[in-house]
Length: 73
Image (cartoon, rainbow, N blue to C red; front, top):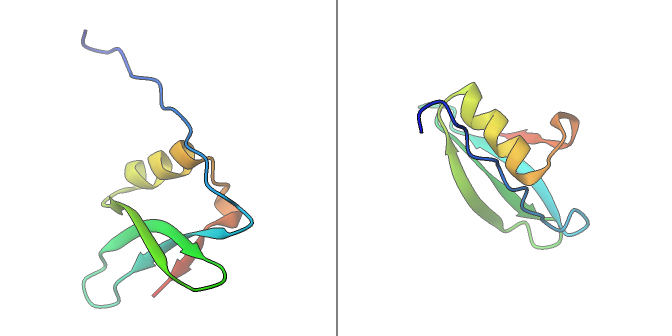
């Protein structure tokens, strides 16, 4: 049981309608990962980013390439 990692299922998002974004607070440094609608600008929060491990998990889970990820402050 220990040492066995669960396989991460890749969830799809509409790359034409949504853009992967990490929103970061200037004051506290808190980071939230999610998707922003390209037309309306509405942000859909997916998960809180606390470490590089969380960031890597987000990228892997949603199949986002590092160069496609946008960081907003």
